[in-house]
Amino acid sequence: MMLEKPVGNLKARSVIEKLISSGISGRTLIFNGPPGVGKFTFALWTASNILNKNPFFDRDFLFYRNDDFFLKTSFILKLFKENGLVKENLLCYFFYLLGRASTSLEFEEINDIKLRDFSDKNKFNTLGEFIIKTNSLLLNGDIFKLINENEIFCENLLKISQEISKKNTISVNVIRKIIEFDSLKSLEKKKVIIIGNFEDATIEAQNASLKLFEEPSLDTILILTVSNLFKVLPTIRSRSIIINFHHLNLDELKEIFGIKNIDGYNVNNTLRLMREYLYSYSTTSKEKVIYFFENIALSIQKTELFFEFVDQLIGEEKEFLIHFFKEIVNFLREVHL
Image 1 (tube, rainbow, N blue to C red):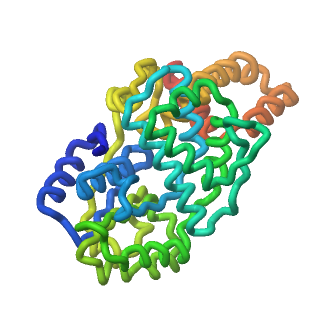
Image 2 (image 1 turned 90 degrees about the vertical axis):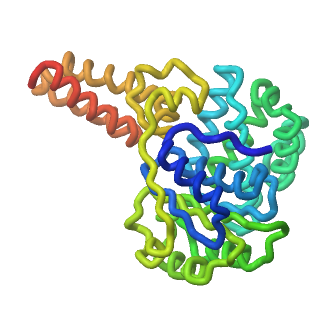
């Protein structure tokens, strides 16, 4: 099963298609662009076309990426439950999540997690056992039913997501494991390695990775995704083909997720859409701004009222505060201040 062609970034896709057609090998590609615009999805699609199959089923494929898995799993679960059906390409998210969890175990990044058995709540599974069971559910399609009907299963997915979301750097040890994989002979013709958010790699890890770029295996294609190209060592940048990605529009976001009721969202990438869908930051922040100008600003000398409001804001998440201050600016523009 090949992965579906990603949505958006047509220019980047055209460049990638030409590289695939040319039989590219022994090279490094850097997919550079803002967060949440599909760089990693395009990397997976590229791997699928090079390996001619779903890369998650191929032993010539390795990926590593730190991500906000808790946010994404929460969003996917809510989308499943509220919309009933999600496009097939989003099933890849679960292969991605379970693959990353497997890597965490293999690389000894996390200790095994005890998870309640979703078919017998009096039993517990190891993370490894849960991964095997869930992969089977993905393959036979039973995962849809379980998400809608089994809270324990959903809790387990969120627990795993929360645990692996704690990783925010790429260490020297991770790079060593990747170099070890790169040194192995491919089982078929080519190997693909994807390292997501490569700017998370420490300077020590980037220096340790130079062998991958200076002495590339002829049968390996290495893909890095980055949101800040200048955090990548110049030596690595100079040895790579850099492909730039850009923000998505609302129509593209609708197509990606199969949802239509997002016209009021002020978003240009998948991460912002997920936060808005889960937490309604824009709507809530607008309400807060109106409340501030109607009830606080006119009587700001009543300091206790003002500081109560400030205390509420301090308790909010960073993403909400960003929306809140944007709405203040919009409000002032509308009243011509």
